[in-house]
Image (cartoon, rainbow, N blue to C red; front, side, top):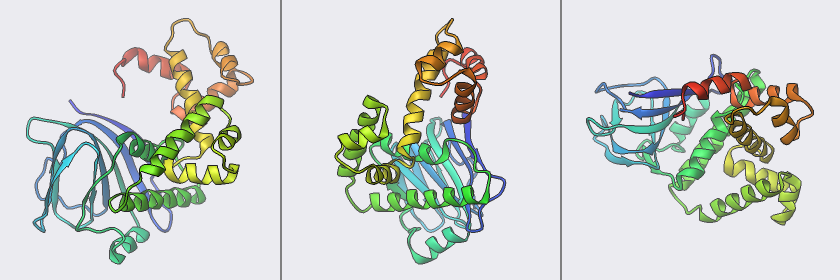
Length: 274
């Protein structure tokens, strides 16, 4: 049985466009209906399984874990795993004038609808860096989100054309530096870069700021502690450096999407959560 986790759903978009919905689909079966045509763009990143993509133009390509499919508006298409099998995917629906311009100018090449993106951990984090976190509320926040989506698309296009080994290695070292010190400025010094240069490169490669990455590490530890029986919120907030339980709960709810008590209830009901 397939399971879906919605990360983002915007009822309104910026004037230049943006993300309508972004989800993770576990045990998905792809497009069940032949001859599907969409009015918007769809980005599908497969993280488990294999299958194929084909469309009305006669394009037919294999798809495996680590491949991204970019579906273009008004093109009849089909994709999915073999009959009786399933795959896992992140998918993102987006639209707007700026992406129409990307298409018309050839920046998004509809003749290359499948691109290999590896290593998967790197690209999964890039996608989560974009779709995770709080929902954009203001037009300014929606605009920034759209810019970040364009940065992701730029890197996807470049990944199909050049080797990103050096960038990926740098990002892994930067993440380790942050995890070791839990201080972004110290991590920048360890990487022998200015704070501003470190911050900009980290955000470009990961899709989120080093500060947000540090917060995610703290929240990962909080999730582990919330899964331990008998651990009080006061103990968690003290260990993780929050001034009190209120500030911890507020940050946890903002980052994870549930309050600490809701999270405890959920993991108690669904230990195999994804």
